[in-house]
Length: 91
Image 1: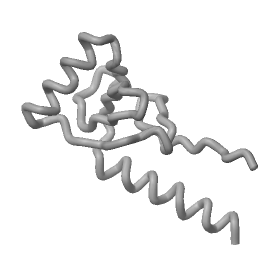
Image 2: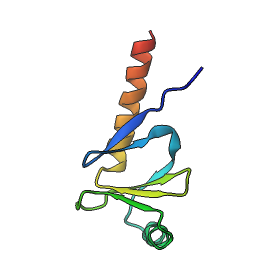
Image 3: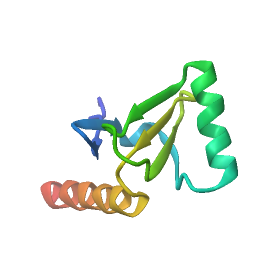
């Protein structure tokens, strides 16, 4: 059975595949800033902020680092909504 890929909107008309997210972190620590800089230098940084302030960093299973203006809390809430919608449609 083929599994349907689920996405969450991360703002500015962008979305990421939920099953490809390894971690979501906040951008205000020195290690997270270093992570963004290293990803940028390797060509693995995806800027999905739409020119706004970075509020979250998504680390993907492909080693890509996606930065977004969406907060980690909002992203988690959207993921939970997505799960609840799936459960409702199955039942």
